Length: 331
Image 1 (cartoon, rainbow, N blue to C red):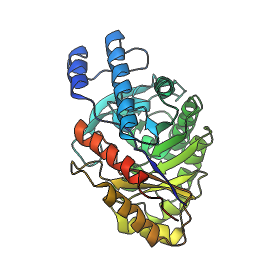
Image 2: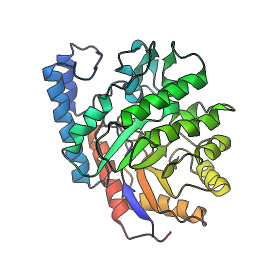
Image 3: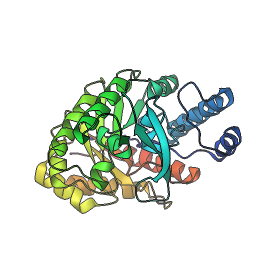
């Protein structure tokens, strides 16, 4: 039997009240939200948002509860954007959409700073089903500019070590989701594609939890996918919304990990899927990979949810939870 687990890649939309309040508090400007330096009122607002987002996930019935990443103004670039040895410079488009982030430029050694761990420690007080979220090492390296380490390979190794030291400080958690959209949008070339597996291993080895590597915005190139399967993780994911055919081809041709992450709800479209539709997407994938004996399938949105209005994001959480609770599935 395949266990179905409802979850998301995090990065939830801010509630309207929080947008207004934070806009006023920040003087309508983006600020360097280095951990512990936000100021009392801003920090308190983020604490309230975190509590609200966790309650939202719990009420929807998700099996894994994320912190919500309300402070991540720079999206997946956040862990570097708040680092003391990183300068944030110009505004850069976030993948192929109308969202933007500040370019993080690494100017010194990437030492651990405990920023994400502090967020998760606060979240752990509200749930025993905690899911940590980090950008994957390749994605974080691709979102940044290196002015310290030198080569692309050296920088990827440094970013992986940084994420590993960060993850080692996390409180107890059930799952660590590594979001790796850049593996799809700007795939690594020869040599670096093999190093990506080693980089993921470095991060996964730092935690005592189930690690899910979730690409999105399409499907991985064959060679990239094959190398990623060498990583010591529980699950490698597939974006079945953006490109189901190529993702299924990869699974058929190269196999899968023991468990899988499946992007079965559209994180960028306000149309809310029916739970039965979501289960049909899982069933279809399962039927197309007949040799599969998935221990677990993580049912998730195919991208982060910050693109959506709060009410639509909430409805999609409920859809995922309901889909996972429909009749049990034989692998």
